[in-house]
Amino acid sequence: MPKGNRSVVYLVSTANTGTYYTTTKNRRKQQDKLQLKKYDPVVRKHVLFVEGKR
Image (cartoon, rainbow, N blue to C red; front, side, top):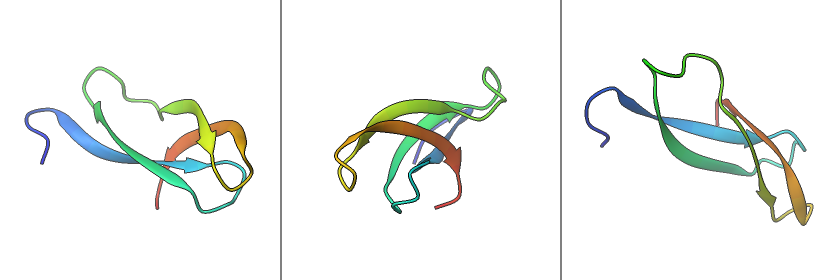
């Protein structure tokens, strides 16, 4: 369980494969949605992952 201002967020693939990553983010410092390019093993390439529901 994260301490303080950090909370767990899910990064969901924009390729609609159902793949997701979990990470933490500081909600006070970064209030917009988190977007990262990460590897999606279903399509076997790097795609954009955005913060969303699992």
